[in-house]
Structure formats: C-alpha cells, structure tokens
Image (tube, rainbow, N blue to C red):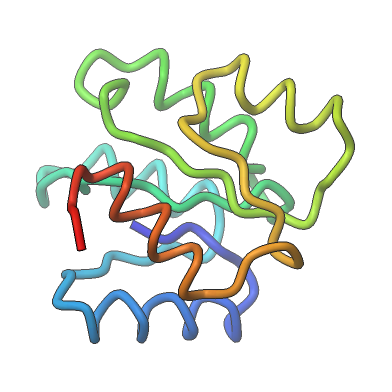
Length: 122
C-alpha cells in the first residue's frame, strides 16, 4: 500500500511496484488509508507511508496501525521530506521499520528497501 498525497510521487511508486509484479493499493491521505485497512479487502504486505498529508497525517496513521492487533505486524516504511533528527526518531520510536527521506533516495533505491523489508533477495 502506498499512502501519498502527491499524485506525481504516488504515480512513480505505483508504476515502479506494478512493473515489478506487485499489486498496489493506494490512498491519497491518512483517512483513506485507515478506511482501506479497516475494510475486508485484504491487508497489504507492506505500507509506504508519507508523513505530511491532509486530513490524517502519517504519524497518526502509523500510531493507529501499531495499536491495531491485525495491522501491527505489517512493515511500515516512512517516505517523507521531513529530515530532522526528531522526526526520524519519532517515526522509528512509533514502530516504523524504516525512515526514508524522499530527496535522498531514488525510486530504485526505495524499491530495494521495500524488497529488503519483504525478505526478497535479488
């Protein structure tokens, strides 16, 4: 699942993941993500989560995921523009499996991180 309010960024990662053979579920904001995670459509194997979003931000989504028994084992990678040490520490302390700063990683490098979290060796 990709949770990202920037349509351009969403499209890049949706395309990259789809081309690699992954089924991609998208959400344009945290509220939509929580609604989809709460439905019975099946759970994602991993969540790529932005922090700065309208309605419900990524930190709040991360908290709710990690508090929910059926969701808390899903790996969450925060992919954001926030690069302050306090932001990184907060994300990791709340249970994020990784914290990637958008400007520091290419889409290919993000794919490597995703596959690493999923236990896929290339």
